[in-house]
Picture 1 (cartoon, rainbow, N blue to C red):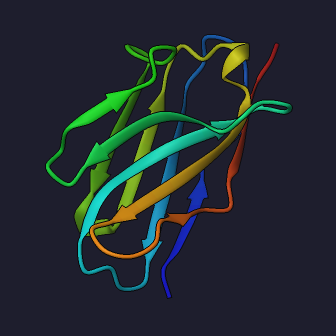
Picture 2 (cartoon, helix red, strand yellow):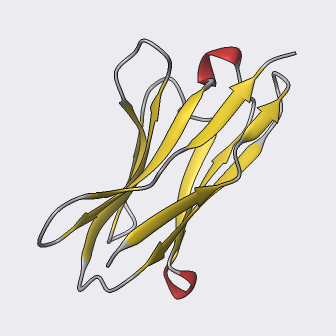
Length: 116
């Protein structure tokens, strides 16, 4: 059974940094992409960043230049480095795995709060 476990969230002051991790366990034949999404209270879940199996990345306009998504295939882990954090980045962050075949998987989420 495939599981995604996020970690690295927390409380940080504006301008600070956090690095989120998403560890994948279980058997996946082939991964098409992995991504990070976020959902703030009262808002819809939105895409933050995505990285394809080929290493191509795409970011939401609101995080371009501040966030970086990466993968370490040897560790079955995806990362989201978040710099210059703003209060509007406050949200629950979710890891997503989209395999080449089959259903999409989600992690349980990790809370990021940006506040002074």
